Amino acid sequence: MNHSTETLPTEQRQRCEIWTRVMGYHRPVSQFNHGKQSEHYERCHFREHATTR
Image 1 (cartoon, helix red, strand yellow):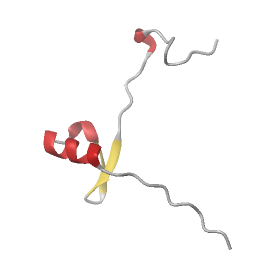
Image 2: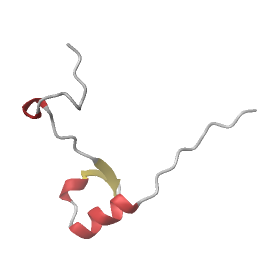
Image 3: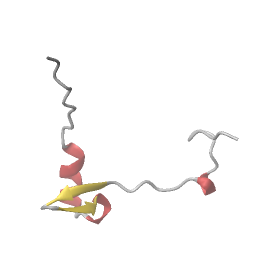
């Protein structure tokens, strides 16, 4: 049976932890203080596309 997030019962869902690299090591964003969490969510993420030759 294939479940999507819209139809998956709440008791079967699992929390997704977001980690990021800070000062040379990885840490979960949930452990940041409120100011650092806000700063993290305001970051602009970008994708660098491969160059063609």
